[in-house]
Length: 202
Image 1 (cartoon, rainbow, N blue to C red):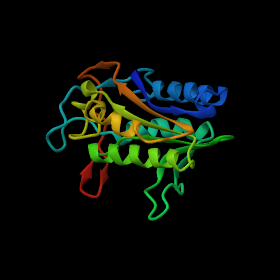
Image 2: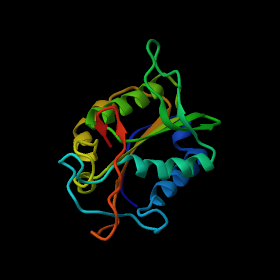
Image 3: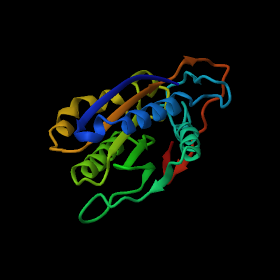
Image 4: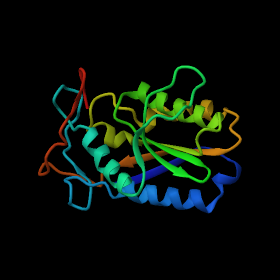
């Protein structure tokens, strides 16, 4: 899988410039880049079918699952609750790595664009309250988005709002957005199956 862009939205304090974060970030990007389709192929080739119609295009959850397995083997904990908010707590975080500076949180987008905003808000709040050391959101590029479940969160629709998250007065920590894209397209590979979550097809 290609990583075509990493946007550092927030970067402040000692952890942001530490060897610990540099090493964690590098390992995480390597794990994201190692995600492949078909599984075991060593590259990411997607079936080039738009996902606007129900049942068409490619799912997202199996892509995420490949990364989650890699992270779990590397010591990350999956589906973790972290006390980010003072009142009602937001949902679980996809993957969390404990570091000396605090937890590093990763969210892989499988929902719509509002889900992407919630994920960034959740991690920004964690940084603001000093609960997280870093937060990372993985989203598809516009080119990849068109072949996935319709209305999936994507980079192009998040970019106009970056100044909002940058305005949060975080004293310590990092917030990154990692933009991913397929290596190639081919009608010879299988579509990525779609899972179901309630009425949503992912």
